Image (cartoon, rainbow, N blue to C red):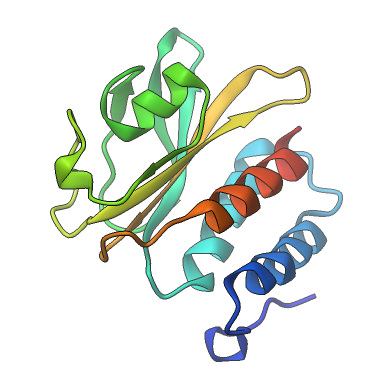
Length: 163
């Protein structure tokens, strides 16, 4: 099943996420490789919403359990490594909780990989055993671009794709 082009998107964000979830799950059906799954999710989500500026994964480094390393993403250059507790991604990893930041410039310790980033949502990603394997990061060029609808849909998608 091919995913819908941007101009085919329903106006309602929740409806678009539901449609997109079905599309992503259909594309990933039978694919066991985690990196391939992450690359596909990042790609399809990057194209789904015009406000999404950067979409991608930071993986828990198996050699440094308290550090994230950049994984599959779409967008401009991302930070290569982020310590747990540092910036929005590191906070999401440390707390194992979704972070929604309306204005990244007001977030203490925000890591500015690209100055065009204005708001951000970061969702922790867990495997089937409940272990943190990554965080999924989305940046937008507009402030207050993310809300509870995004959090719910992205948390649900990550659980279905990686748990």
